[in-house]
Amino acid sequence: MKFSGKEVYQSYLKRIETYNKDLNIFLTVCDEPYKGKTPKQNLLDGVPFGVKDMYVTKDLRTTAASKVLDKYVPEYTSTIVSRLLENGASVIGKTNQDAWAHGSSGENSDYGPTKNPWNTEYVPGGSSSGSAAGVAAQMCPAALGTDTGGSIRTPASFCGVVGLKPTYGRCSRYGVIAMSSSLDSPGIFTHTVEDCELVFSCINGKDEYDATTVVANSLPVPKKIKVGIPKEYFGEGLDAEVRKIVEMAIEQIKALPGVEYVGEIGLPYTEYGIAVYYLVMDSEVSSNLARYDGIRYGNNRTHFSDEAKRRIMLGTYALSAGYYDAYYKKAMKVRTLIKQDFKKAFETADVLITPVSPTPPFRLGEKVSDPLSMYLSDVLTVNANLAGIPGLALPAGFAKNGLPVGMQFLGPQMGEDILFTLGRKYQEVTDWHTKRPKL
Amino acid sequence: MKKQILTTKDTEKIASLANLSLKNEEIEKFTSQLSAILEYVEKLQQVNTSSISETSQVTGLINITRPDITDSSRTIRKGKHFSVDAIFE
Image (cartoon, rainbow over all chains, first blue to last red; front, side):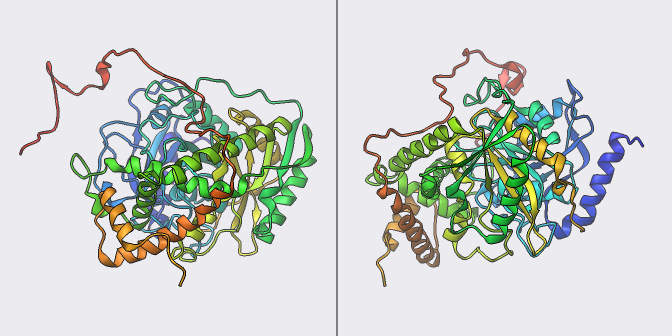
């Protein structure tokens, strides 16, 4: 059967119209496809994308899910979105998220949380909550997100979809509302690794408007992919169900052709990741959010919600005179040690396999009153951002409560092709990625 | 009760540096939340970094520049002039 691009778009739009009120996935919906004027290629012809509201889109409202930007309409389009449009894709809407990407559950949106499509009493994960849920709920076949401390991988894991955090510098941050500039990684949500690879090929690469983008090719894929397990990611705090699911996936992966298991690997500075992250990231956030003064555009700083204020203040304090050395500078030094951990690990292994979240998806409201407990849920994702390495999250099973549980492949910088190859092999022998929630 | 790392006066000073206006109820709440987070990050002091230099970026790129030429496709013009928002109404 053949369908026209228009019919495809209409069918997704109908699903959005039916289910968005309950799931709160899209903040802005495009009744007409938001398209490029002259697509140069057709690799993504007719594919509608959900785009996290951190990406500016010319003439299309962009809010970062914050009341500060409630009515902001950008005058330019982010490079990544432009590249999608150049390849024939369209934008079907701007997705909900934690405001300013500050969050791991989706509950920090100024427009109400997105609900997990698998069970609306549970969080979809964050901060790219709407994008992950949008793909899971089949409101769009692919979506864009950003991952600064796990914000693609966590919601991908919680929503049962594929999520890629690319190597820092491979996807342009031009036009992506800045959260923490040395950590922000624009990335992708899809149902399959194959789709993810296609989208990545269209959007990655040097951008003259982002001086931190790298010119380099992906590392070649070795004949035998060496797979290792970092023991610090399987410690005491790991939920028993998550451990069981990920360990089962690892057994299946060990048995795949072209894979060699190299055993346990140590990443001794893992436990310091959260402390480093919440100092480095908050400091960069305090600087990046200083521009929102409500003078040239947007609403003034009284419109920031609590989490934004917390992070701005923590960062301001960590950078202030008398405290800079003990906090920010110290964190930057420990960041070096974390980066070195991975460099050493990738001398022995090509891919490290780990859980994404220490627990299965939790209920809405469960962690909101304790910011620190919410931060600790990032323990398995932040170190990849600190080191600038890529991470591919894939569905690996379901917890007893029916919610998805994912795992992640971590690779060396520029190692995306290795992650894609291993991911495709895994999806040839499993079917978790074909499951869809009943809405 | 254990002494918090920050006092309400500290929080007020930080808020002022960050150009955030906080209500009184908020100052108490943030003082205790920020103190808890700062207490957690104390664990970094356990790490010996005496011979370690800072990481401020992970790409290894140095001095990426482009020629200082105007990209006319990105200027907003009205004839020969640049168009900007009015400062006075």
